[in-house]
Image 1 (cartoon, rainbow, N blue to C red):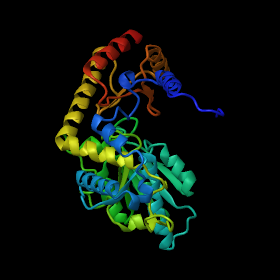
Image 2 (image 1 turned 90 degrees about the vertical axis):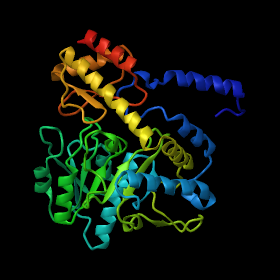
Image 3 (image 1 turned 120 degrees about the horizontal axis):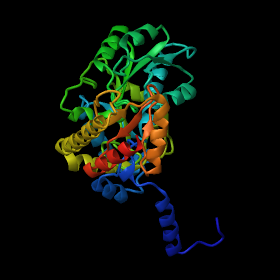
Image 4 (image 1 turned 90 degrees about the horizontal axis):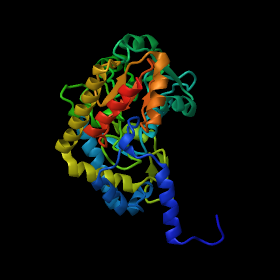
Length: 380
């Protein structure tokens, strides 16, 4: 840091220089984030100083968070769900598992060899959870459609299993695990079931096909959903929801010098701006607006997959939501992705099976898909 500050003009020039180094979303097909909706950006700026970590000082912001929790709960089958707005899926996943771990501790279970069961397609945040919470994360195998194999889940359950996880919108393939069957297992075994719907939560309710994945299933104990993905809010905006309030109680720590008596969030200071942004964009779009966005993303996803088929590139699976995975020989996929990167496209590679992965977010339009397909055909 310099002894004396710089002029506003110099700072603006520096910022512009750094901004030009960042990629714009127009040619990014690898991210599950997008440009926030203009209404979200407007609200975010208005509430920049709001801190939900000390919510008694910002009652208006807290009212918006409470309303968002109600709206998201209703979207996911239970408007009376309990939760809070997190920084995103990783925090939500940590908190869901931490809540059931703490509950089991109170019931007398030793932390030794506690485990949860997740699909092989689970987000890498569960590897962090294993480290942070000192529990074993067991990975169940997948079926031919890249959904978690229910028989594999059942075979891994033992007397130290505290929870099972299903993914509603896997990060790599956009697949939906058989949550109904997992719910039946959870009820039969009296086990906590957490649904990671960080991406799919704002997609699945608006698909033409009906999927059972939320609190309408009695065995579902908790769900995560990220407004800063397909909800078009600002970053960071995630959400963790519980069916029962006592799970939130398992996360509370005393906050004697704040305006609240306790805090259940993982972070202390929390952005009120993100809560305002989420509140504003959900109020502005409503269910009709969100469905319009999902419908267009799905149309473009099908356009991409159909175009790839015409040039001899099949999908790994037919897209369930707005994630397309294109199949290449394993020796070729890296070369194709690198060649596309040279043409300023950003796509990614899945783990198993290896495939080219493209996420069709709201910033993508038809012209972009056509340009991408032209370059893809040249590359292959």
